[in-house]
Image (cartoon, rainbow, N blue to C red; front, top):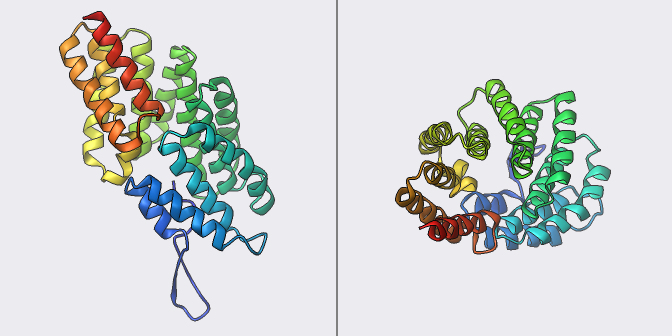
Length: 277
């Protein structure tokens, strides 16, 4: 989610390229190690004066890229360090601060700190709902997605289902957020052993994914296949489930590395399928 402006205009009317543009372009291309290095270089270059907003924004991109490489604890620590800086520079309920809190909550969830993620996502969603500006609905939807994931991770699947359905009803744009909300709904249905419904929802998510530009669905690499594999396994279609789980694992390994939470989830599902064979 890009809330900072990539380009602005100087007093002479010329286009000024954001110092963050290259780091964001690398991140969106899935070149996470390069994005991290570029963002850290920008942060060092912009570290003076103290209140230059680009330095902490660059470090937030570095944290995103760190998490995308599976270094979730390191990302969470970075967010903890950045949060008071964002509050000081931008304000407690500024879109940039709320986005950082949402990203931090996702890192907490990757560390299985699901109750903390739930609490933080609920607070961010409330703050974004109170706020004004075009970014706030996006932030609220992202926070609700994190909340759905946290509820599912705590086996509170009916609550997650209700929230996912409510969020989908309110979000009418066929974009990445619709994709992740459908995946959250599929997860909640799988958690309730409603595997036929989960498979249908995963297939809808797959259809949407195919219609989106690659940079929009890249962060969800492997997620559709995981949802399908889980549903297929629940339906007793083990061979198909293994094919999907293996595809998810291979894709996640290539995109995120072996330590990413989704790679680990795919590996665990493969082990479960093989153990049941």
